[in-house]
Image 1: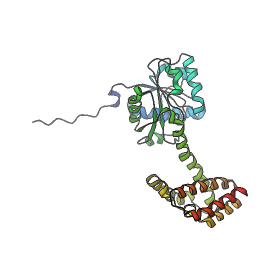
Image 2: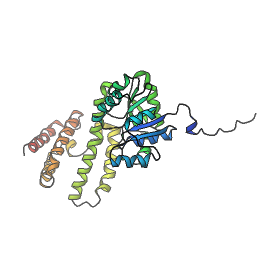
Image 3: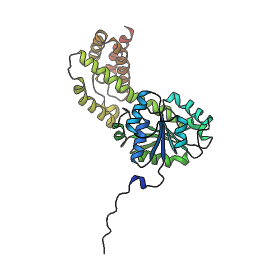
Image 4: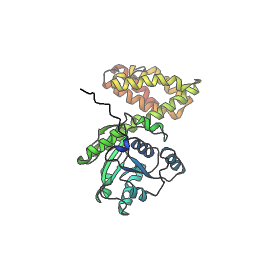
Length: 306
């Protein structure tokens, strides 16, 4: 029996159902998603942007793709990425639909975490196919973002009949689709903001305090510690809590508050709020003994009154 010769891998451009792609809003997200779709064989054909930074970003990540007004992007593309700030999205959709820029059968994809598919209703009424695909990732506006999409979870919301199409697009970008019901989008987005956005604030503040304490390389000191804490938290949740609050070391926490008032008063409110939340969770999970919690919560209450 003759062995079947190995087949050559298909060129992405030879795959069926390749789409022309447009981007409205060349912020940090849109060009990265379009570049990722291009790697999957789709063809970016138009991009719009306003600021100098967005135009520069589009030129770097989507070279040779023409910069045109938003209505022209929709005229050229079968799949349109609406990657504008959350607050601007409803007005943009309404304006494009009212101007007759939306075509029946056109895929409109927005990347807002806050909104589901209903924010695209004005376009849906004239025949567009609405998809909400939110990458749960922080973006830099550089080519590294395309690599980070590999394995990135996407919050997916769409009409049931478009669910498979939405999930297929996410998979083509290297992501992992996670279905989010329309009504759950605000809670979903709040959860991500609580974890990712506030993490940046906490880390930046921690580095500032370490510098003030004389640490020459706070990033090097924090890297292994925070990496381990994040890994433990993802694996074990509240069981990963450590430190003076979880132990009920009221004296240590009081010393922290006193030092912060002296050297970084702007950090006191955040420290007290997070310490109180940590104490509540540690107490609820049986890690903090009730008799120690009383003294600890007393210290935190006194910190609020000063």
